[in-house]
Structure formats: structure tokens, C-alpha cells
Amino acid sequence: MREVRLSIFGFGNVGRALAGVLLEKEPFFRERYGLDFRVVSVADTSGLVWLPEGIDLREALLVKENFGKLSAWTNDYEVYSLRPEEAVREIEADLVVDVTGDMRAHVWHLEALKEGKGVVTSNKPPLAFHYSELVGEAERRELPYLFEATVMAGTPVIALLRENLLGDTVEGIEAVLNATTTFILSRMEEGMTFEEALRKAQEMGIAERDPTADVLGMDAGYKATILHCVAFHPLTFGEASVRGITGVTPEEIERARGRGNTVRLVASIREGSVTVEPKEVSGESPLAVKSYENVAIIKTDLLGELVIKGSGAGLKETASGGVGDIVKASLQLPKG
Ligand SMILES: NC(=O)c1ccc[n+]([C@@H]2O[C@H](COP(=O)([O-])OP(=O)(O)OC[C@H]3O[C@@H](n4cnc5c(N)ncnc54)[C@H](OP(=O)(O)O)[C@@H]3O)[C@@H](O)[C@H]2O)c1
Image (tube, rainbow, N blue to C red):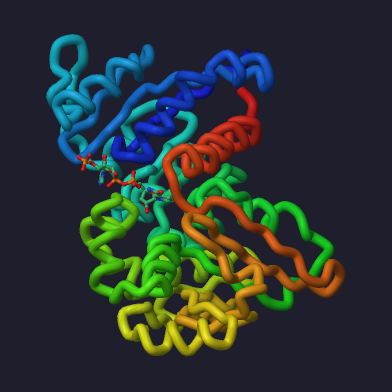
């Protein structure tokens, strides 16, 4: 049995879903992979709870659920107010798991790697802005740096491009990578205005309270940039051309419908170029996804056209990507 010490940053929707899977499937990870996970720290913005012997995740979930913040957990545990960059230096762990939305997280990802720790993340901006630095550092140190859940939640498009298709040359990718915009555009097809559809998405908890990153195309732009980095070579979000769906009118949607088509926020990725914009696509195209699905059509010289489609959001689905990476990273960690 190999014990792997995890230091988890972020205890929001994804962090708690991931903790739930680690708890529920503990016997599966032991039996199937010989891995025993010990969570030595968990943090939210209120504080960091740290116990080298391992913290009780069940209790952590109860505290967060009942009090809304980990800093309320003061009876058995010490709560620290370490910044993540200090925490990754001080805490003895094998893997740092980032399930925050911290825009500056690349700083502590790098710090973690320099400290000899592997990193697993679902947080997009570090990769969309600093891919080359982060992946380069991990490669130099022969440490895992895994980010499956950043694109298409648990649908394994990153692994497909990074670990399979190694003999293929990717010629291009077309993809729908943001579920909120698909939801809004689908409702507009049913006659709602953009504002009504957005309100509905917020009421149903599909869109964030601040939906800017989704509707302006930034979320899809981050993801498309990451796909470009993996399929071709590193570039940054600043080099991507991004237009969201705020300018899409009911008339455009209606005209597309009349032609048997549908409008989706489509990412087009070619070597050296990333474009995200609303596009009319055939109702028969794999890009005409519904609800939470995301899809990527990958064109390669040997395989031709490959379609990968699956859930692009959701907590269990994102936890699938995150936990899968934790297992993979654990098996890749240097022995001893
Ligand atoms: N939700 C999805 O379906 C999905 C899918 C793919 C990827 N992701 C990505 O996964 C990440 C987490 O998403 P989420 O839906 O779980 O967001 P969330 O519910 O807002 O949770 C974010 C968590 O991170 C904590 N946090 C933020 N900055 C921190 C810092 N510097 N140090 C320690 N903790 C910090 C927050 O603390 P507080 O609790 O104190 O606010 C919160 O617990 C995001 O990057 C998101 O883009 C989400």
C-alpha cells in the first residue's frame, strides 16, 4: 500500500465533491491501485486546517456545510492563516490539489513544484496564462502536473491529446466548451431573450452569480487556449481572439433555425490560432450539443475526424477529472 499525502486548496463546490469521492471510494482506491490517500490540509479563504496525521474529511464537510467556513473548525484542529505560497512550502505533502478559482495560483503551483510536490488542478487561468512555465518546471523536475478537469470537466480530452494520439499530427480542433452559453442559446431558440435566458440559467444555478466569464467567452477562451497548448505549442489567452454571446440576437437565432441550423459558441483551434465566437452550425453537426454537454472534434492526419463528447460541467463530473488526476499523479510520483 502506498500512502499519498494530499494538501487541498479550495473547499467550494468542486473541492467538496472531490472530498466526497475520496471518502466514498477509499476501498476502491486501496484495492485497485494500492493507494491510501491521507489529506493533511484543506483550505478555503477563511483559513487552512492542517494536521500531519491526516484530517477527518467527513468532519471538514460538516463544518463547511454548517458554518460556511473552515475557520469555524476550532475544537480539535488548529486553523492557520498561511497564504497558499507559504502553505505549499511548509506543509509536507506529496500532491497539492488546487480546486480554487485563484487567478494568481500559478505562483504557488510553481512554488509547490520547486518544493518537489506534484500538482493537480481544475483552475484554468494558471494554465491559460502560464502553461509553458508550469509544464516546463514540472518536466524539469519529473513531477506530475495534471489538469484534466480544466477542460470539459471529467471528459478526458486532455489525456486524449497529451497521452494518446502520440503518432498523430493534430490539424485542428472545433469545440463547444461552455455549458452556460449552450443553455442560454438553447432557451433563446425557444423564444426567450438573452436577458430572460440568462436569468433562467442563474435561477437554476447553471450560470455563476457573476456570469461575465461565461457570456463574454472568457471561460471558453481559457479552455481553448489550454487545448491549443496541449495539441500544438504553448500560447497565452492574450493571443486568443474571443467574442462571447452577448451580441447574439433572437433574429439571428431564428434565421439559423429556418435553415435547420443552430447557433453555438464555437472554439476553433489551429496551430498558432485560437478563436472563440458564436457560429451557426448544422443541426446535424456534433457541435449542435444540448444542455451540459461539451464536444470537441479533433482532426488528425492519421485518424481523420475524432469526436469526443460528454459532460462539460457538474460536480460529480468535475470530481471525476480531479480524482482521476490524483490517482494518475500518485502513480507517477517518484518512489521513496
Ligand atoms: N463547477 C464546475 O462545474 C467546474 C468545472 C470545471 C472546473 N471548475 C473550476 O474548479 C475551480 C473550483 O470551482 P467551484 O465551482 O468549486 O468554485 P467555488 O464553489 O467558488 O469554490 C472555490 C473554493 O476555493 C476557495 N478559494 C479561493 N481562493 C482561495 C485561496 N487563495 N486559498 C484557499 N482557498 C481559496 C474558496 O473559498 P471560500 O469557500 O472561502 O469562498 C472556495 O472554497 C474553479 O477554478 C472552476 O473554474 C469548476
